[in-house]
Amino acid sequence: MKKKIMIGILGILLCIMILQISPIRGANFKIDDDIADLEYHNNSTEGNPGPNIHSEIDIASVEIDGVSILITFVETPKGDNDTRYIVRVYWDGDDFLGNWTKCQWGESSNSIHTHFENSTSGEILDEYVDDVIGAAGKIIVIPIYHTDLIANIMDPHIVAVDTQFRVAVGESYTDELDYATGTFPFPGFTSWITIGGISLIVMIGLLVKKKKS
Image (cartoon, rainbow, N blue to C red; front, side, top):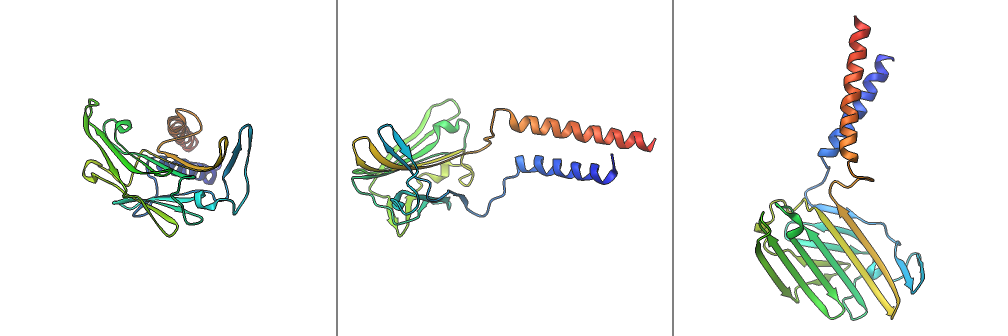
């Protein structure tokens, strides 16, 4: 094996392993979502309606700026009785499934539910705050309460946004954005990349040493 090829493979493997543990982000946490990706449901009928259809529920991005959750849409969102926006963020902690902020806007609801637990699943805080979610242009602004209990607010474990426009019973348009840290196509994928990469690096080193001797 030529030296240049071996060096190239080594560099690629190192980059892959570094990317696993070093996510690249700006000052704020932000996730972009595909647009015109709504789903249409009518009992057993499903499909994508295409662009410019109920763009008020078409998610463009989700951002956390340290004090608020900002959900941007293709068009101005509507918090009316036919439209629903649900946001769930699971924060870091000893048991992140017990540390979360859940919100709903629309369908006669405007509420933020905040919950935190300690390492033994004991409840630290469970609080509802109503009538504080609102729209500023194309953005829904959701205040984050008790940020002092969130160790790393820019690195949530799970972010899920679900939107729906209800036409009638059994008929609706929906969109969703789901993010989770450390997710790969199958369990253990990250570990296998690391193990395989290290093994290959060792093998290349042995081959280089053998060739020199």
